[in-house]
Image (spheres, rainbow, N blue to C red):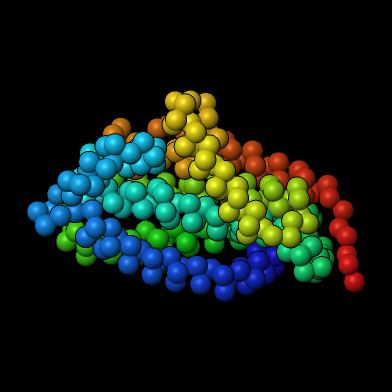
Length: 270
C-alpha cells in the first residue's frame, strides 16, 4: 500500500486540475454544440445536415445525420471524438509518466519501498494509475449527466448515455496500459506528454485511413473507431469483437510491461 499511496499522492495535483478542466469543457461544450447544431424547431439544422452528408471526413469520424438528429448525438460526438481523445492522451501520459519520472527527475523512488518486490511495485503503480482513470471516468459521467440533463430537459436515451460514457472509460484503460508498456520499455523518454499526444494522433489517423480504404483490419489498430457514437447507435450497443480485442490488448500490454519492468536494472544518478 505504501507505493500505491505514494503514487496517488504524486498525481493528485494533475488529477484535480484535469477534472476541473474537463468539467468546464463539458459544461460549456454541450450547450454550445446543442445550440449550434439544432435549429429553433429542435431539429438538426438543414445546412449542417447537408454539409455532413457531403463531407467524407465528417462521416469518417461518425458524424452521421441520423445520429446527430437525436438528442444523444451531440453527446456521442463529443464523447467519441473530443473527450475520449483528450482522456486517452491523459491516460497514456499517466501510464508513461508512472515509469519514466524516476529517470526524468534523476531519482529511483521505488528504492524507498524496500522490501517490496519489483512485481509488487509494478502492480501498485498500475493500481494507482487505474484508480486515477476511474476517478476521471466517474467525474466525466457525473458532470456530463447533470449538464446533459439540463440541456435536454431530461429528454435523452439513458441507456445510450451509459454505453457512450463507459466506452470512454474502456478507451482510457487501453491507452493507460499502452502507456505503462511504453514507459516500462523506454523509461528515459524525456517528453511523455508529447509522446502520448503523438501516439493517440497516430491511432486517429489510422482510423481515418481505415475508413477511406474500407479496411476492417486497420480498425483493430485504431481504438477511437471501436466505439464511435454512430456505430453504437446503429447496432444498439458495442461491437463485441472490439470489446474483446480491447481487453485482450489491455492484458497483453500490462503483462508485457511487467515482464520488462521486473528485468530492468535500477540506475541511480546522484
